[in-house]
Image (cartoon, rainbow, N blue to C red; front, side, top):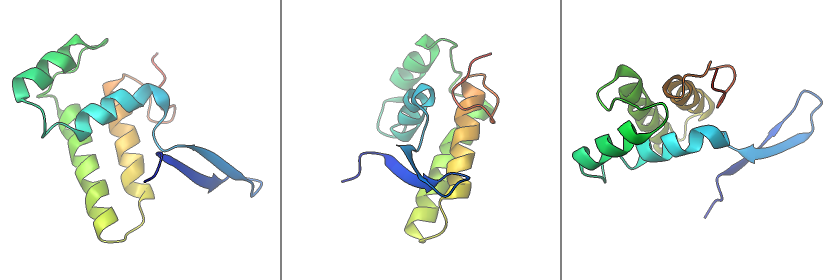
Length: 107
């Protein structure tokens, strides 16, 4: 089992270890990941209790779910996961009112 960490190279070719999803975005991504396992009314209640609240019918929430589905498809097809991972980060950042270039930041 993996601990959710990945290794990549920085500009100097050195290995950089870190979580695939920045810490401030992890709760949102985890909620989206379990969206089909939770009763819709309960999920909506949890999403609306966040700061800022998330509308479960919003295009951004739908985009995050679609990005996670695309990631799963890419993984099953043994495709490059980086594009799907970038989609997940961008969608999650939108939900946290952050710029996609600065994952997890709240202006």
